[in-house]
Length: 228
Image (cartoon, rainbow, N blue to C red; front, side, top):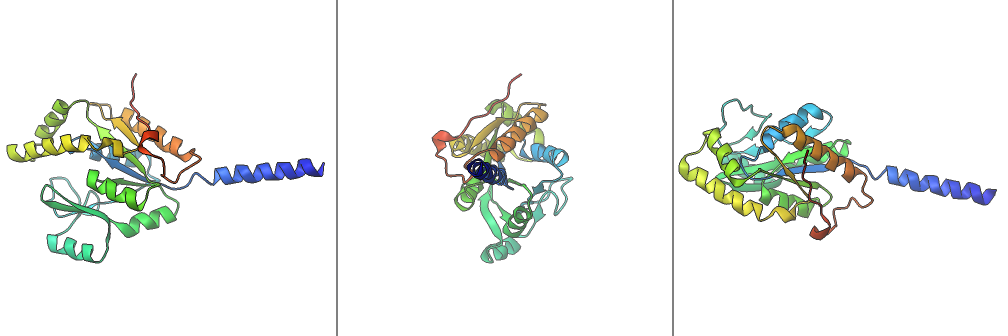
């Protein structure tokens, strides 16, 4: 009888340990310019107000409708470089002639406080974060086709033809880095809710993993698409 009781106690300890595995995570959203990262994250804000959403600092000019401190933290190049010298950023990179960086302290504080943190970065930034926080969840958004991606970029009407060509060329390069990510999600036209459904499934599945250390090899990472 005592042996049975002890076995039950040990089993309960195992169950408690497994329950504790599901902990707050950093969710990294990346993908080429024009793929819809901002749209996906805005919808995530509505669906998951309990998550924390890291605000990226940038030196690029503010676009119409963007709010400082909400969409981006807008800084001068001098302010950004001073912050960089003071180790203010979790990661930083120069993209299309502008500096981008993710403030470190808020990300660390929110995770310590028990909240999932969503962060948007480019491919370079994702590689930097993986080296620092390998247990993060890395998701790469893909367009239906390169032609559609180019059409989306043209539709934004924020770039001249030369800049548009540069973004398309960079997108092709970024696609070559997709296997450095844990998951891919196809962001089809007018189907952002489908993209969110897949992202939610990824986050739930990651919370059920036995090993959440992020030490798996690229061959063990999973490709996720969604179909009707």
